[in-house]
Amino acid sequence: MQTSRETYVHALGYHWLDRLYDPLIRVSMREMAFKRRLVEQAGIQPGHRVLDLGCGTATLTLLAKQMHPEAVLTGLDGDPRILQIAAGKISRAGLDVQLDCGMSFDLPYPDGSFDRVLTCLMLHHLTRADKVRTLLEVLRTLQPDGELHIADWGKPASRWARVASRLVGKLDGVERLEDNLKGRLPILLQETGYVRVRQAGEFATILGTLSFCSGAKPQ
Ligand SMILES: C[S@@+](CC[C@H](N)C(=O)[O-])C[C@H]1O[C@@H](n2cnc3c(N)ncnc32)[C@H](O)[C@@H]1O
Image (tube, rainbow, N blue to C red; front, side, top):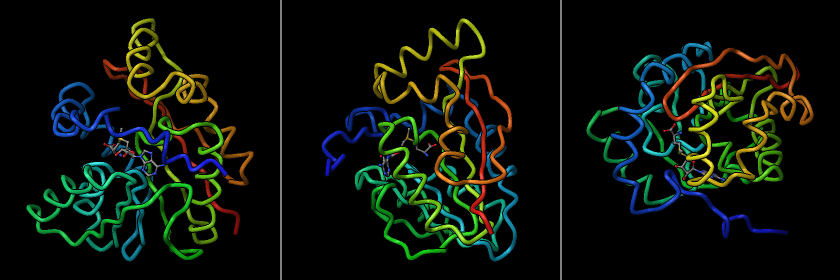
């Protein structure tokens, strides 16, 4: 089987850009606005176990914990170096958040571990095969009726968004982006067994159009 680690795409494509990730996303994408919207969409309840899949520098993980202090938050990423940045932020915030290193398509958790899985700007890093493996793995680790909530690149909603998506394609790979830009993530959710699949709107950024969607594990 292809290991897929050989074709791993880091946060901004290259390790030397890691330290620039937070400032770049903050100024270019109105980051806190769309991450807040994703957390609100997820309907997290007190006591929920929540996974931030492909957490990167853990901005979303921390925001979810701040908005829902009684939820149990875990962030997972495949890149140990980006997790060092995340660990520093978590320690400075003084919040109780677990960080794990692992691959999205081979999650180190037992079946039914989470009530909610959030994933932001991660799925477009994956090949179609790894997107499918990841969606199946998330389904396994969700509780029955648990939900996956996604914010990621979607169909460009303007001519500018189409141009900007070429820059993202250069960093992260044109073929990996294709399913996103063609609006196929909800179809992949349906094909992998999710129910209540829903497109939940768009968000314009200067780097392209973000699309929100969600699906649930059958009861
Ligand atoms: C563009 S960054 C997004 C980080 C964060 N979710 C955010 O919204 O700022 C994508 C992250 O996904 C991680 N990643 C890529 N492929 C992965 C995989 N197969 N499993 C786990 N993490 C992965 C990268 O290391 C990177 O930190």
